[in-house]
Length: 71
Image (cartoon, rainbow, N blue to C red):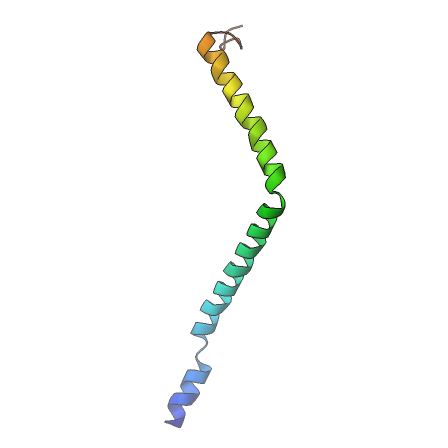
């Protein structure tokens, strides 16, 4: 019985999995915190991109805008 307990205490394979889990949790918390902090900035950036894409699509539909690849 004592040898089984010693063997279980020496086994470190579970410790590696726990360490990877803790690292993943830390990275997730950091990503969530960063995105939450930058939320307003990201919203305005994506708003600008959305407007530009809508304007480009409207220009393409009406046939105006750009050279169409010709010179």
